[in-house]
Image 1: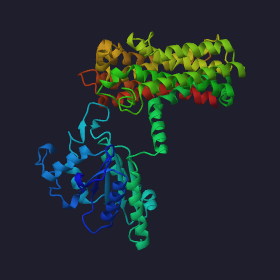
Image 2: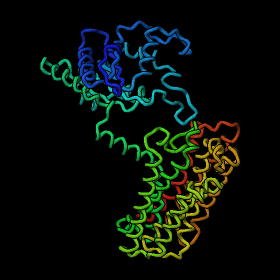
Image 3: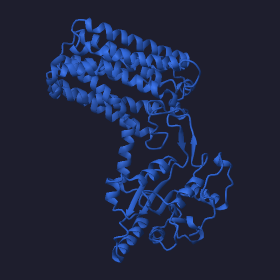
Image 4: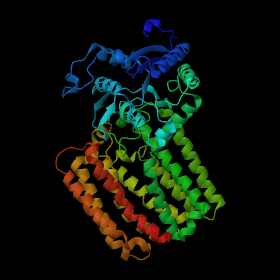
Length: 518
């Protein structure tokens, strides 16, 4: 259906329907016709590509894909993909995935430079077809539930994750029809009507209120950066069991106190997203452990939403702190003072006037707020004496072991950080200076692992720490020494040292925690 035949309103959705069945009299063609009928009734602007009618070589026969001759139909397909806001694929599931016809079409159309590009980020690529959604309508002889449970949906994963999301197209809705062999005329009529209704509702292209809510919630979860929270909880719980044993984990004070800490951490990451926006926007070397969550850059959340989220999270933290002070036996002044100082220092990582990461104090800030401050909070809220030195001593190796990971995470970001005036260790002293600092912190933590078991009042599990921490330190040190030469600080190259540094700190937390717990 050409654009001159469309019945579309000025603000309609641009919908491209791609039919990948090699036979014209197929059920897939009938489903596609009904989808187009429904979408036309909804006012969509429609284009259609029947792959069987296109003239093109299905094989990529050039070593450099972009140098292969581009047939007019392939060029037209790329123009239509660029025009489309919503792409609908209709094809049969054969041998668990798509027909060779459609696979060859995708091989020729989705080329580097058009659908994706190689990038410096941790993933090695970046999708170029962002801002589009997709709907896969597929027929199959296997019952859809069996396809999911017994075969684990290989075609779904190939199309949704490895193809469309790889190119930046998201969300991707999948609607299966089957088993076809066992269907009768009445059931096929129901399927055709469902296809028409899918088009009429423009499912996936126009999100329902529930879908909008779920997408917004998913964006907030991404902004929270939940991958960093388990370690904080473990350190907090270690302080609590050091003070009162396993019973501390069942107390109301423990969980109310953790709610305050959790909300302080949430407020911190939201503030960081807002105040690091300039650096993150100009940073092509982002990854799961660096470069922020990118929710503002990707348009998933606005800066004003994140500011409101930070205020709300801080408000809940204040409420939890006051509840802790008035409804538990935790001494109010030490508890409120501890949480107040922790909040100021944590949020002050990027928030002016402190803006500690702009003063080469960001790494120390993270090490303190994720080590001594959190462990002492757990100790205090579980009934530990405020004046005891034991929790502070126990947290020193944790702080030292935390420094390598936060330092290394800033290495890929150093150029973007330097441009906006951030003075992280990596931005100020360069890649090698940051690696040397991380190496020194790694060795210092290993030495502490050997010395600390002999100190009075240390957790019983402290004696087990060297058995894992010292070999891990040797491995991490070897990785860091190998990383010193050259100037390759890409996130992909830094991934193994980053994982090694993030897991290093667990040796200083988990054995003492388990020993105190049991």
